[in-house]
Image 1 (cartoon, rainbow, N blue to C red):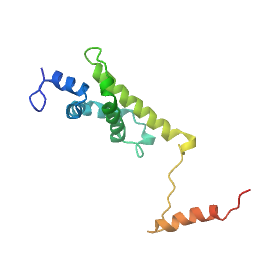
Image 2: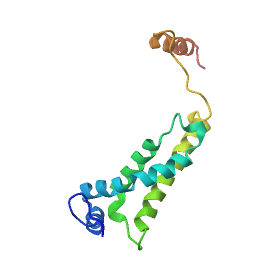
Image 3: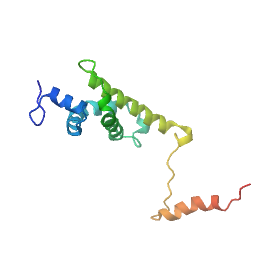
Image 4: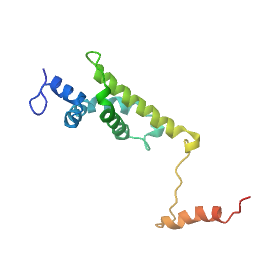
Length: 136
């Protein structure tokens, strides 16, 4: 059986992680990072690569794993892998939906507010016309 960094078996680390040991869960997640990176990298659409990174999705996934590991129920070999992949897939889909949502500006390009080296002037040029309009 595989040994962890402190000479513990993979089963020991897994059991400690499921019992809520953050160091054990961190070690367990670290072993799954290369697999998740490869899967996520291939699934991020090209049009969103500038705004969404694998690291963004992993951060959400690992946060979810830390928050919900105590509720994880193993259903045999590969259950943890499947659970972690599903968390990552759900987080990726959620991030893509947020980027594509019209009400959140999906499909629109970010507005550049810089005028030369002065960001404040650009911001004022955008805000002042709106501030001088009257409302009913």
